[in-house]
Image (cartoon, rainbow, N blue to C red; front, side, top):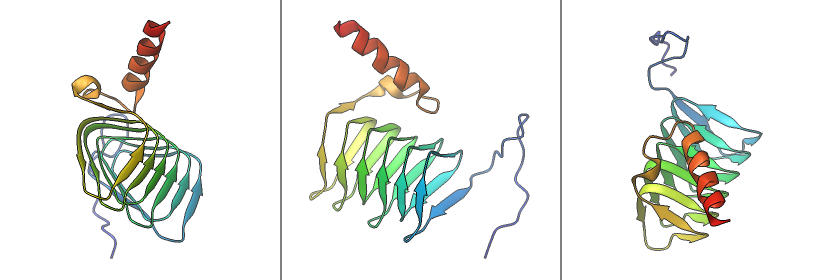
Length: 144
């Protein structure tokens, strides 16, 4: 049932292999969730989600907070900013309320989002959202 193979360790004791994290339906989490591996959310998260890999928000999944990751598939609800360094895929049941920043965006018929959308390579080299946040601060400062 569980893969108990030993994962290779990096110099800073961070696991270098891909891990998959599941937040099941009926589970509710308050606070920030950070992972270096993939995350699948079928439950509810009230707080930000940060992943160096892929975030999947299932049809029963809900995130009230910002989502920052490399790739994302959204079928559920997100109320907050979504920052994706590569591809964001909004499935037909996706409901987004908040701004989207993605290098590439695919939207199925039926998906909806309310907010602004910025696309392009500007956040390609993002590290846990830090560069994207810096770029946003510079853009806001440039407006004043």
